[in-house]
Image 1: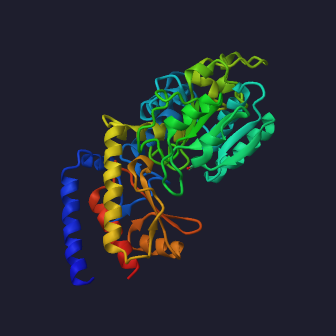
Image 2: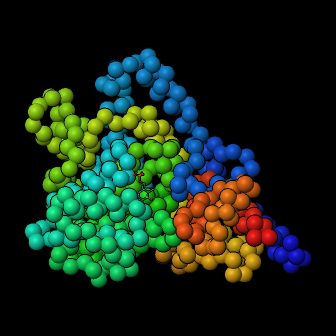
Length: 403
Ligand SMILES: *Cc1c(COP(=O)(O)O)cnc(C)c1O
């Protein structure tokens, strides 16, 4: 590094140390098990391991399954886990109890929500608007849900979604935060616009829940889905969740009416009678090992306010961008994540030539982010375990990769 760069590096490292020392959430890192020497900026793809999970999973396997056997279904914590864990996630997304149920993947919950929304839409509604830049599975599932319900799926850029809503719109599927760019969309405004058009608003929270306030109830969202293995740290393939606003629960006609969502599952009747509340979003037997690992993972949130997480997330991404500007040679990277706080999620995406090779090199040097085709370096900031010194080291290492 040149003389001025070295001086600037010392100054940024000192700033980082000061910011970490003043960070009210700094102590939360102890609630996670992270390998030494690694800066982990991929928690928006797979969250880190919360410290209490291994012990809880071992207990579930050896005692609840091994010793208690079938009795754990009736006397233990198993049968009611989907709605119980849903109620643990609810405050993180601004939902009152009884509206969130955990189970299946995000893809499957999207299917339930979209078909459910289409079936609730008023007569004459023929279109399902879908975020055109969405994570692919959302688009695939929306197209199938539309075909099944006689609607036409219409891709729309989120910036033009409000203008596209009208009397033909049955429902609109949008992402709270775009997975590639990290752009935060206006959930309150777009939900209002959907309602003004007489349509239902379905939100995908995969990249916002656990990173920033969502306010599902406050903004009158109709349906929402999200992952738990990203910012909620539930573990690889941990079950997703489905939010059905209380006012829609009575009319929610799930396209997957499995026996777990029945009002009396053990009556074993040939006719389907849906359970009341979010429980009717259940389908089949829940994957207990993943589900209870997720429940233990949520202990990391004890006493944590999402607002404080959001404040730290913005400070971290601001600081990372400042360090990138200081360390990376001019013109080598371009941020595709909006600078405006109101439009930024909890990640920074940098466009660069040869992004895949750059990310491989970063990972080899202990800074783990990820690559998204065609040319994006993605850095996710999980405020529960990422600090300012991590942000500084990541940007400095990126500068070294560019030589
Ligand atoms: C991560 C993600 C998914 C993942 O869906 P799975 O069914 O869990 O594989 C879906 N949609 C979005 C927007 C995502 O970011």
